[in-house]
Length: 115
Image (cartoon, rainbow, N blue to C red; front, side, top):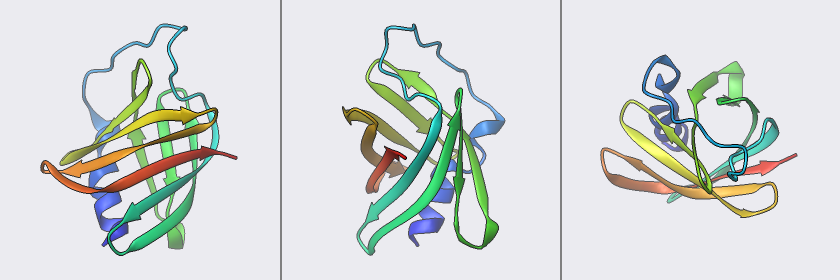
């Protein structure tokens, strides 16, 4: 269920949508390697992830890779998907966390931690 919810959020978000530009002074999520953690009702799961520019790749188990396009905002980034959104906000250097919603329902808290 956790992986399905995360995949629904990430899904085909790389395929479309308007992108907001982020001025250099904003606290956007920098490119690099991260650990993506999904904290949901049924537990927590960690997966390797990478960000290059505005594209995030999450490497789920069994070789399944999900791509998404980040929308940079003043204090982090939003990851819109076809049915929901994850709102990553900076809580400390290299750590971004926030809620995830699918069809408006809260699905859990998601975290990106710089490796």
